[in-house]
Amino acid sequence: MKANHGIALFFLLGSLISCKKKDILAGYDKAALFASATTTEINAVTDMWAKRNLVPQEITVEETHVITAKLSLHIISFRLLGSKEYAGVLVPVTDHPVPVQFYVGGYSTKEDPVNSSAVEMAGEDLPFVYVVPAMRGQYVSLRVKGKEYRSSMSEGSRFDAFDGATDDVIATLNAVGALFSQADTARAMIRGGSRGGIVALLAGERDQRFKRVAAVAFNADFIGLTAQLYNDPTYREQFMSGLINGTTTIAGVRQLMIASSPLYFCSRLPKTQLHCAQNDRITPAAQGELLFNTMKTLGLQHQVELFIYPNRDHDNIATGNTEMAITINTFFSTL
Image (cartoon, rainbow, N blue to C red; front, side, top):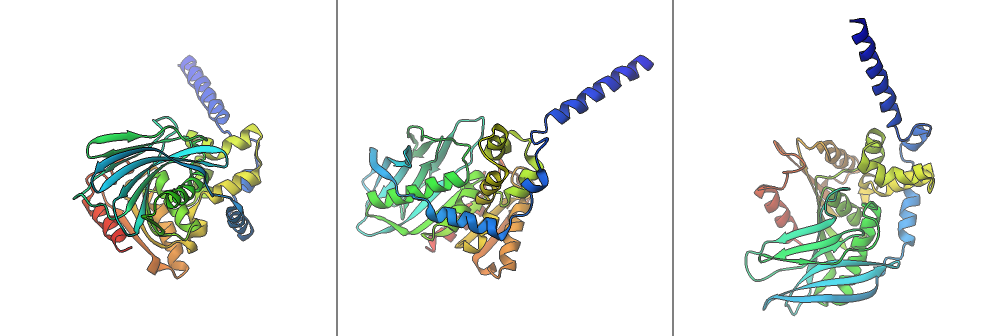
């Protein structure tokens, strides 16, 4: 029995040592790293955004596919700060400007790096230009009338998944406006899920051309979340790798976390819907409630609606959820 206790104690100590080794921020000032965002830091981010040049260069139509007599699909490309990026664009045949609707999906550090969308049309007419961007480190896949269309891979790192991906969305909107006269870029709307929900919110905060935002299963505050989850591989790659490899500082990491967090800029949101799953453990409904309540505190409750779906989680919030689909489609149809 004593020997067994000794073995158990040995393994327990080994486990404790192993756990300590897994703390990637051992030796760093976590109190400073995860302190509440200050007004000065938030203003510095908005100043940084204002100075960015998101005018795309070398805008090109790579492919054109005639879907019907009233609809064509284009794979477009452009360069943003030297990196080549792609997008799929469905354009209706029309003699008057129509709104522009974006879709941005989630992503994984391990799974196929694709932003994919299956387009369902009740009839032959599409009342908007539909855009699916292949953000940095991803390709786009569009399925229309049972056929799949793919782009090449956009250059850059997919781990720049929020602030950088929002740059990509805004640049794509600029490229679409330059290529297609039908696209009324002053009437843009954006739906996103998971990572895409965060990007949708950030795009609405950063560019006033987005008049409607529908965010599904998203996070709002990456300082608070990363403080709890920094050892998670996804959070480590998104926020901590630069600090660990010595290419950035605590101040740099904080700026990235703040710039990736819709919470700190929610006063800039247009009309917005927040859709959350009650049982979501990846992007908890509490994050949606935090954003919603912050907007209420700011007197902006007229700008935002919150929907929490019982008995749903991160993976199935949209699966067969006709209530959510109708709610978002009705919301967008008012633009």
